[in-house]
Image 1 (cartoon, each protein chain N blue to C red):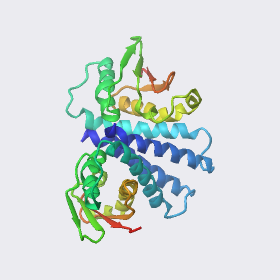
Image 2 (cartoon, rainbow over the protein chains, first blue to last red; image 1 turned 45 degrees about the horizontal axis):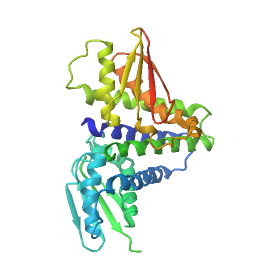
Image 3 (cartoon, helix red, strand yellow; image 1 turned 30 degrees about the vertical axis):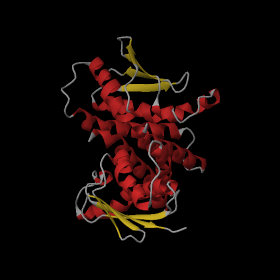
Image 4 (tube, helix red, strand yellow; image 1 turned 45 degrees about the vertical axis):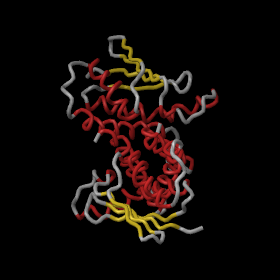
Length: 158
Length: 158
């Protein structure tokens, strides 16, 4: 647990800070999710370089997705994605059965409403990593039973 | 490099965000350093538990400092403190010859003025970890030649 803890605790602080700033009235309502998403995107873009400098070029889109599920996820979350599915038409679903950034939220259904703010940063993270690998995408996430979580990636053809 | 990268990039984003909020006028001048310091303190407090749950009780203050220099520093920064000194009267100096959170700042002298905002979070981190180990302290940091950095810990006797 200790290895991913600094990142996880800092991520929590970021959420608290951004939502507290919003309460005090300096951010328009609804801007917080996109603030977190954009922050994640820049981190994801930054991470591409240290992670891929020793890696041979990817042979296709699926290969890039496998990289995200394995190397990228392990670097950030200290575990791999548990399941990757695709419809082979530009939609990929990445399932993490124990998503680290949800692990501090209680499992009760009443906490489900808070899940989006704990997922926005990571959606951006994936979008940023993919964009620096030449893949433009829209990334969304959903939780059914905590702390399991699904990220859906829709490739945007350019 | 990749292992500490997510934390480092997120830390950079936090600094950018806090200073940008301040520019737009919603935070009093000078409040940013303490915002970062307090954020670090809460993260440090949080990290104490995952890090020490399997560790036997510490025998004295010096023992706690060694824990901070080794286990704690390695958890957050993926390296140990390079040098620990003490005057045996409640002052400890921890030297990190290649402090990770400064590594993205250029080495030029003109960047030295930006160093405090890159150190505030980590000062809080140490203060928070120590406080949860029963040691009240004031932590400051200084840079002479980047990216080397010294953290000075003054123990506050209770």
